Image 1 (cartoon, rainbow, N blue to C red):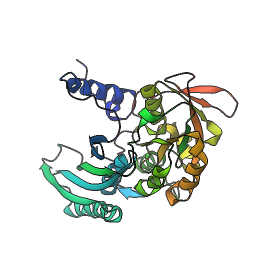
Image 2: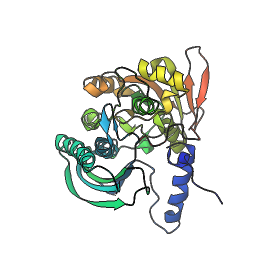
Image 3: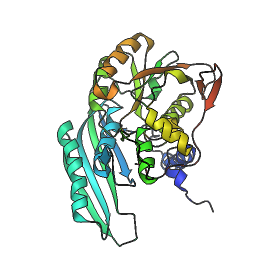
Image 4: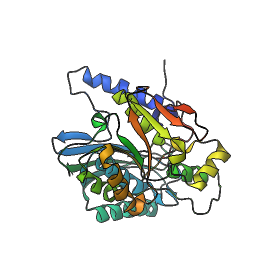
Length: 330
């Protein structure tokens, strides 16, 4: 009998296969087929997203479990053009958790809600016996309204479209790894942040196709999902990828590839070529996008595959990771 592994929740190949198997149980009952996007549609102009959050450690440079939960939910709405409006928050706490820690997480979550104009509509709280889970898990359900005339998504991506990355990949995953291995890397922080303010200006571009926040599985997994989901090829330029030297150093030390490390405030964006210059201008005008870069394009060649042109001129294939080198990151 097959059993679940940590990799089934890591955002890579095993996770994709598990989600597909779960979805089949519902599509076989004549229900609508899921789009496999981070936000589902309630109606033509309203979206909803559901997520669970578990991270170790629960406080980390640049954020906390509470901040992460709200930012992650807002970002899942924002990448589909949905203005975040309402959220439900569930708390599952282990007996023995300090009350003040829980209140601190809620305080950081509330601060993000206040800054983004998101209203907490309700929630649920459970306390389970000691040893039943590791401290604290949070769940969210968030709702938003469409802020442009069409719903963006990978189904809109076309050959010739230009790909952008809004910042260096892997900062959240690298931060969590540094905390776990007691590595002191000055200045290394999670990129945990709300992407709404960064992405909203892009919605005015007629050629804005789609965006995805690169959480579990990182940028590499997002690009593989797009290539396989649209049966199109993607080609990246290694020298064009924005880099954080601190993330690169930690990756070299621990054998981790930054493209597969989680982000929590960085997105991949696809736009039509005629809007590429304006897209980059708008991204770099926002503090979260100051390091944004044009990283590649969509092609009809090698459909379903992501290629990375290296600095030596060769091309190597990027695939989804199979295992989970760094579990419990979001």
